[in-house]
Amino acid sequence: KEFTEIIEDRMVNGTELEVSGLETHTTYHWRVTIRHEGKDYISREFYFRTKFDDIRTILPECNSIEQSTDLELSWSPAVGAQYYHLQIADSSNFNTILYDLDSLSSTSYELTALDSGRTYFWRVQSLDYKERSSWSEVCTFTTDHPTSVFSFLDAGEISIDQQHGELRITISG
Image (cartoon, rainbow, N blue to C red; front, side, top):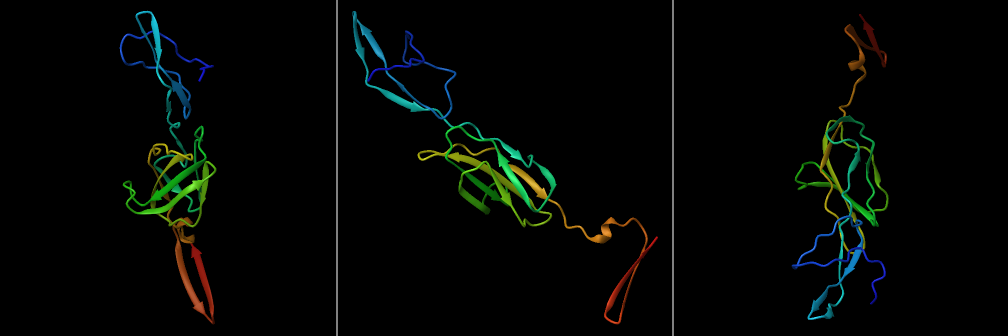
């Protein structure tokens, strides 16, 4: 096979070469030419694949509090990802996974009817047909506590009078 787009071509004394500036999630082919007594010996072709981009969680921000019980999780896209795997758990060790979604095609997911006043832990990874990325940073968010009508009242006297099948609430203050 002829190499048409050469990225690195140099003489090396030794058995290692570090190359920087490679694209993420890309397959690169390489070979070695050994020069001995004026004659070149070319190795067979080898290849390697660079890893996925690191995924960053975007929303809600890590350690968020007072989040709605209906909210959208979102994360950064990864080059080459065909799907994303989202996990949501009730602890940072992910022993009890509440949501385990491994075929998401978008970079967000809408959660509804979460428990009030609860802390959730979440992470995401990218997938293609052959491999998975590392997990993102584990982030947390805490949903807000349920609010009653009375929590909005300043101070005052509340009286409840139930007569003839009617409930009357009087607030004064």
